[in-house]
Image (tube, rainbow, N blue to C red):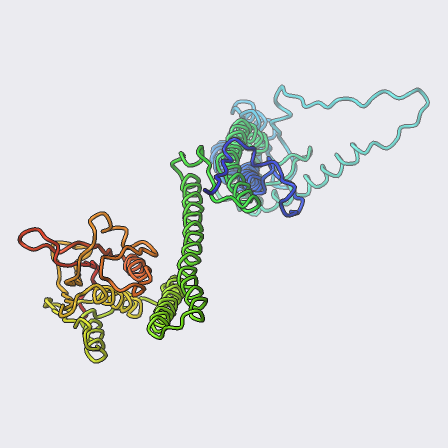
Length: 542
């Protein structure tokens, strides 16, 4: 009996010395698939996290909202500044610097914002930073030893460059606003921070008296706060991602590795089956794969056992006639009587015919699988096929052989999806088997009918003979290979024992079944054998 390898207790991830060499790759837990799962999950998470950190679209929306808010505030302040209480001069009015600065004190400017007022010449006349109590400070540089010349400070140089760029951008914005057009821009402050700025002309009737500029420098702080708020969620997502990668590795990659290692062990140890009980109990695709592999190896093992038994049976069946032929040849030279020599010669001829028939049936049986897989199924008309087969027996029948009759008791076309060659072999084997056991004067009858109560196998073909029947205990074993039980009086060597086995193999390959029964008379005595073939039918052609 074939041995069964159980790899459930073995660590399938351990390399075997007999396994073919594989490329050395960086793996996650020894699995390339696990590493790929981890890499793809992390890549997708990094892309998502990077996009969240960028916040480009959200930043654009924040800036736009900030500009709209500043514009609303600037319009209110500009309307206040345009009143006569904050202007001076007749007939050409101008902004009053003292009163304008008072507006910035009386009208509260929120924290993080800066308001500046410029006259019609673009000269700063009021700044909310100057009139508030807030004084911006910067840490002093470290003290240097006395007498040491001051080295150029790169920080001061950078601050000077930032101040120059900021003043240039602000001057451009003020000039555009003095032309009578409201301005909204994003620029850098003197400290290099990004600020959202709006500049609105201050009008007295239609005359532009100056420009009001409102700035908000808290956009970057808001974005940084949003990014910091995303960090806990990103860490949780990273943990979940790593956990998912680990679970996928444990429940997908490692079982696949175990299946691969078990398959390699089957190949290297020439075992007949593979068994992974803990995987077969799983109700997912991995369990389906494990069960399919076990079923496949079990089927292959069964097939190999059948091939081994077939080879042994073939050797045994061929050896019998060869032994008889050898004995007859050794005895032939010693026999002088003509009648005895003729009987020995008849035995030799009978054994040769038996051997020839046996080799022919063995050849047909060995080629049967290839023929069934090579030919493409197509609709086969059983009535036409059986009519042709029966016609051949009628034209080639010899005196003393049982005639064959056909009864087509079907109204609709009897078509089956299959191969006409193997199906023809089924009915020829059944007819030959029936004729070989039929007494002189008997008839082999074939009947075709349709059983509408059976939706799966409605087509029924019965082959009956008037022979001695089949022993009840052998109604199933007659379909086994090299079944050789013969009733008394049957011609020795007329059957190889493969015909009915071939019949069942072909019928089952077409999705049907074949059974054997005995025909009984009214008294219960056996009056012949009957073989029933049930096949699926194809729909009628339009």
